[in-house]
Length: 142
Image 1 (cartoon, helix red, strand yellow):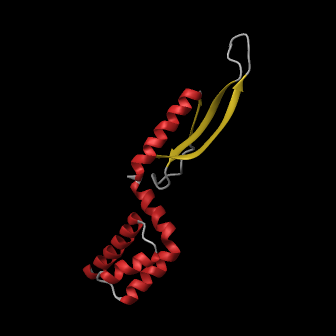
Image 2: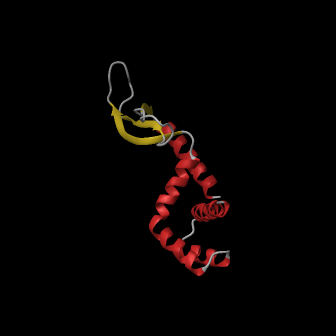
């Protein structure tokens, strides 16, 4: 009845907290023993956590993500040769290809083929992208 449902929710909460806070097995053991769990329950949790930590994190991440997903990213650097139409000689540019699709489990139907987006970036665009990625990295760290 309600007791079982309550225990399931309590266990789910522990796993979510452990995943969000990046607990390792010893930390989980310590946290559980300080809480309302018996030594046997704590040992069982730690055993499961050692084997399933990556899967738990993956499931929580997928459930917290609601948009499309970058499925593949590939790139190459091309160097334009001189032609009658273009005077730029040996100016490198990055050719980027991204495959963007629905996250798994977003729809009960079969997954759609990813949308492929291709574009080119010159030196200035790459420098700007690099700067924005560094800024984003700082925000994520804090």
